[in-house]
Structures are given as C-alpha cells and as structure tokens.
Length: 112
Length: 112
Image (tube, rainbow over all chains, first blue to last red; front, top):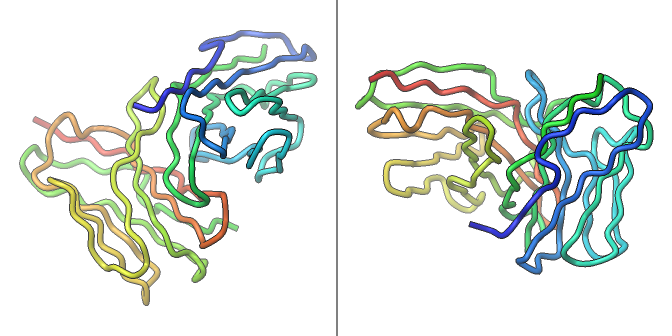
C-alpha cells in the first residue's frame, strides 16, 4: 500500500470556522490531489498539485484553498466552513501524469 | 457536463455468477481508463486499467473491455464473490493531463 495518511480522520466543526485537512505521503510522488465524495456525485476533484508550490483548481474548488510547501504534505483549507462542505475528503497521489492514483483513507468532515 | 458516466447506481448478483459493470465516456481524447473499488470507510483502491491501444486487459478474476467506437468500457468479474461487494468507480484520463475524471460509481452487491 502507498504510504498516505490523512489527518484528522474525523472532524465536526461549526459553520463559519476555518478547517485545515492534512495529507502526508512517504512515496515522494510529484502529484497530489484532493477529492470530495458525496452520494450521487462520486469523486469530484477539488484541487491538485503538480509540484511544490504548484497547484491548480479542480471542478469544485470554490470555498477551498490548498498549499504545498513540501513534497510530502498537501493541505486543504476551508476558510469558512459551510454545511454544503459536509463530506468525505480523500487525498490521492500519483507519480505520473494521468496515471493511476493511490488514495488515502479519507477524512469525514461534518459542518453543523 | 458529465464526461464519464456509470448509468447503473447499483447491481446485485449471485455468488459464483458474472458481474458486469458498465461505463460510458463522451470525450474521444480519453486514452487511459481505470477501475477502482471502494469499501465503506476506506479510500478507493486501484483495481485494473487499460490503455486505448488495447481492447482487453485481464487480471485474475477481473477483465476490462474497451470499445473505443462506442466509447464504452466494462468490468467483468468472474466468478463473483461476496468480498467483491463494494462501490466501483470508472475513471478516465487523456494524454498529458494530470487529472482523472471519475464516474459516480456503481454499488455491487454479491449475494451468498
């Protein structure tokens, strides 16, 4: 299994509070991704990174920001959480463009 | 605009029989296709892939078929086992792109 951890694994927060989710990899893969999974929507890409300090938006990036200051860490920040951001968040990594991605265990976020 | 479609949200089969999961895509530039399996409370795991230069790829009980003219791929599981019960996601990418595009998933239930 690819070495990917996500923290926290579960979080409950209130509307309007900032939240940061962390993805950490030990594989030295160049590409890192954040997805959210919601019933009826499958996996939707939020943001991705193609190198340190190099990031780009996915299809559902509104309300989210990311940072990657080190190869191994990719942070996802909800500046002001809303109930619509209640979801399960998955981080993924890849060493080749458009090739298979390895997923972390997920973070279940509930915004009340 | 959904580029990768899994039109069956769920599928139920008997143990020992064949499971066939289907996926359609609209973007003719896609040239690499993958299937992922996801158990509850876990991250998706890579199952099998196929590039557009092939029309079939096998790995044990799992076979993926690609019909480029119909823009259709399918995953065959033979024989199906109760442990195969999971959500299956189809994904696609186009050459040079960092991103995978996922379908919404099909929940497979294999009954003993």
